[in-house]
Image (tube, rainbow, N blue to C red; front, side):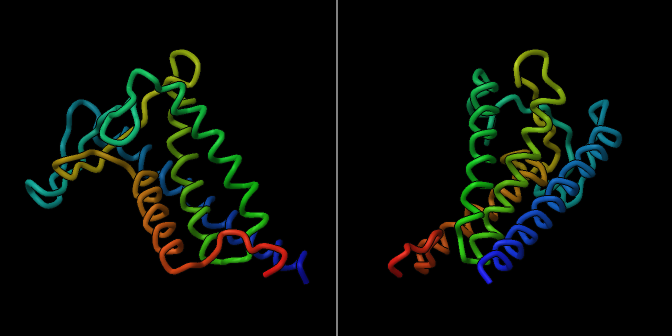
Length: 164
C-alpha cells in the first residue's frame, strides 16, 4: 500500500510540475515572438499589460549581480523538492511542492538557455503588473508560497514522524 501511495504522489507531482513547466515555456516562447522590439499589449490599461523584460535577478530584479548563485540555489531547491516529496503523505504538500518545482525549474531553464557564462542567463518576464514584471513560473512560485504558509498555519505536517 505504501508503494502505491508513493507512486500516486509521484504521479501527481510529476503531472503538475510537467504542466507548470510546459505552460511557462509556451508563454515565454509566445512572449519572445509577440513582444520583441519593444511591443506592449495592454490588457487592463495602467494595471496589466504584456511587456518583454529580460531579468537577470530574482523577484523585483534583486540579486542581478549574482545570477549564477540564484541558479545554483534553484538547482538545490529542485533536488530538495524531489527528495522531500517522496516522504510526504499529504496530497496538499505534494501539490505545493510541484508548483514550487515548476516555477523554480521554469526560470532555471531560462538561466541555462540564455546564459553567456555559467548559469547567468536572464529570465524572460512579460506579465507587467505596473509595479513588477513576471512570468507564469513566478505565479506558480507565488501560489506555492501561499500554499506552504497555509499548510503550516493549518498544521498539516510536511513529513509525518514514525511515532505519529
